[in-house]
Amino acid sequence: MRRSETVSVAPSQIERLSDSAASDRTWSCTVWDDPINLMSYVTYVFMTYFHFSQARAEQLMLTVHTQGRAAVASGGREEMERHVTAMHSYGLWATVTRD
Amino acid sequence: MAEAFHRDRRGQIVANIDRAEALLLQHLLDEVAEILTTDQLPKAADMDPLMRDLGLSDLAGCAVAEPQDPVVRRLLPAGYSGDSQAADEFRRYTDTSLRTGKIADARLMKETLDRAVQVHDGRLMLDQQQAQVWLRAINDLRLALGTRLDVVAEAAAEAAGSAEDHQDAMAVALYDFLTWWQESLVWALMPE
Image 1 (tube, rainbow over the protein chains, first blue to last red):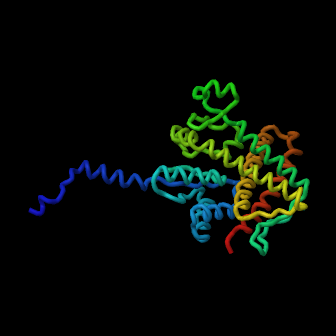
Image 2: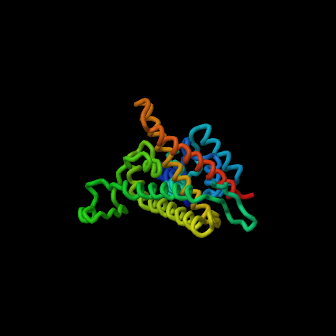
Image 3: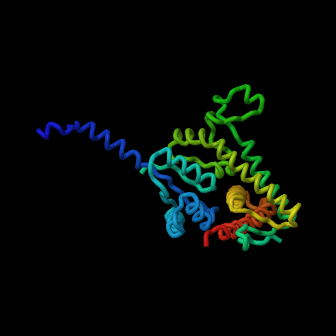
């Protein structure tokens, strides 16, 4: 009788649930390399705005520098738009990207 | 001659600048504020005709066109790549506040420069908050200059031997100076 007490969820409902849970984590704030911004400045922005440690901030900055870009945050779309806006206010170039 | 930024014993961020350098920077800051103010073009179809006639450009809620000027485009880049609808939407909601913020940063830098030269014989003394604003304002100046230099360099490469050379040398010197100065400010602000 216990089995009948459990809620039985149709497969399509499971899909929808997992989609909405997953969609909260499929957006990123991606910072792009550019020829003008100083490496020290980019590091400083990452420390100040995201509160990364200096080591982590430097690591991300180097990724931007050597690979052309780095995803510095991920989460919901609106949150990523706020981060991208902040990056623009600091003069970094960033975009909201889909993972 | 300008002196590098450093942190003094009381924790203030200090530097020196002379009158001529300050005037040059103020002129540049005016240019950046000007270009951010005037290069605002809502999509024509969306602009209220009365607002347009009055010369007002309250863009909040208006669709905003992608900037034409490369400097403005660099100061206000697209928030989405490869999705023009999302990019337009993003620009619509962020354009005004970003412009306002950058204009305010430029204004504060200009005012503190003025005070330094008029009252403190070229000595700049910034608290933590002012120093952060300066960092962004100097960065915007470098973005503006750097973008212009790139644009000019490309054009000069196409039409070899242009008379832009003289202007370029000045812009390059200014850019190099600001690069050095900004670097010193970042290190003055870095936690020990």
